[in-house]
Amino acid sequence: MKIPSLSVLIVVSIISGPVLTEAEERSLPAECSYEMQVWNVNLRSSAQAKKVRHPYDDLTPVETDRDTGCTVCSEDQVLVDISPLQPFFVCHRLAPRVRAVVRDLLRSGSSLHSVVGYRVIRSRGPVDEQGNRTEFSNHSYGTALDINPEQNGLYDDCVTFGPQCRLIRGGEWKLGVTGALDKNNPIVTMFKQAGFKWGGEIAGKQKDFMHFSLTGY
Image (cartoon, rainbow, N blue to C red; front, side, top):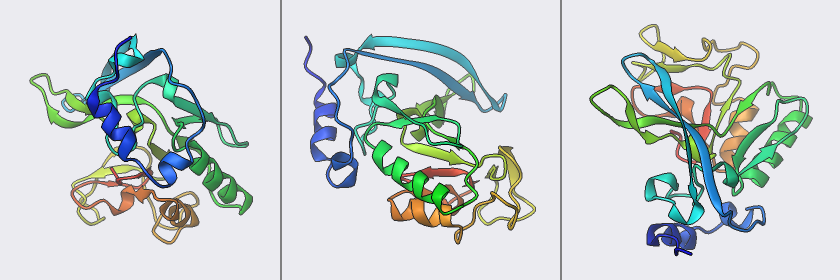
């Protein structure tokens, strides 16, 4: 059996605090499998669905999130199933934290309608000659959530929100609409208290009002 790469061992060893201590108990799987898509900037859509399968010991550095130790492997994801939401998957290291926040929000009557978690897609990083992105998104590791995407779109050309912002994905964001998120919304507040950053506060040209991750991207 191969020994996991040094980079993976380092990632796991340096993680401390809630991410590690909240992780669900599990043994390392024998296999890593996932279905990957690629975002094409020319087509403005994802394509090239590809199934990947290899021994878990053969994980490459790009298949492992350096901040959490979560991987793109479906075997590292766990189901969060809390009615009335549709079930979704997140990395096992974040699942207890996410479950706790979601339960509290639903009990308090917040406007939490839908959550999208784990989905493997190369949608970040440099673009190749065909217009394909080359790096995995945080969703690919199960470390990001999209909440109420129907009311909280992803915008480009949007250093500050205004008429110049261009909707790329999701529904139009309108302040005050039920399900729309802003910095004072309890959903944003509670996820930030749990260590997540909100994409509506991203510094740069994009505003991703649906998006929550440990880095905000």
